Structures are given as C-alpha cells and as structure tokens.
Image (spheres, rainbow, N blue to C red):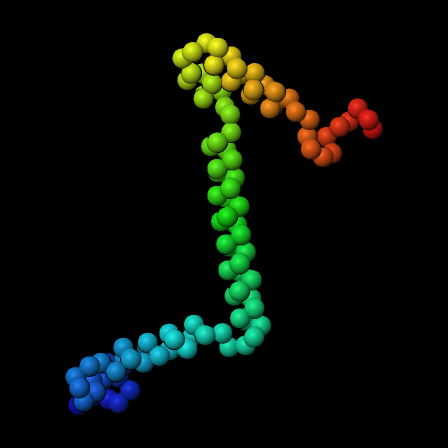
Amino acid sequence: MQSADHPFDFDETGGESFRQDAAESLESSQEPKSPEEAADRFGIRAALVVLCIGLFIAAMWLVTGPSFEKCSALENLAQRNACYDALRNNLFKPPAKGGDLRNG
C-alpha cells in the first residue's frame, strides 16, 4: 500500500509524476517573479557579456603586440634590429593621459 504523498507515485500511463512535478517547478523557478528581478538578471548577464568581450580584447592585444620573443625569433639581422627599434619606440611613448610629470 502506497501513500499518496510518496514522490515516486506512478500515474495511469506508467510514468513517474515526480518528474513532471520537478519539470514544472524548474520552469516556474526560471521565470522572474517581478520586473525588478528581470532587470537584475538582464544587468548581470549584460555585465558578464561585457566582461567576456573585454577579456577577449585584452588577450588579443597581448598576443598581437610586439614582444622580445617575436623579435628574437627573426633570423634576418636587419629585420630583427627593425623589430627591436619598433618595440623600443613603442615602449618609450609617453602615456596618453596623466603621466607627464615634467610639466607639473
């Protein structure tokens, strides 16, 4: 004899009613209950997308920029020296904003 409150009761078709109840509760928990919750979820998702895009851009910037390893891998001496000159000129550029202490 089974109790009616047992979570694994079988319905007439032989399927478990517990699975259907769990699916319904999962669907109802995924829907935001108020407009504020929907706005919060949108804000969090938008922030995560912007963060991922920013990290991707930063990684691409680090990979594509000139480096000592790239210059030292060149076999032609003239190309290697030109690469080092470009790297030195790039590193000696003054900052775009706030780093000029000589005028202060």
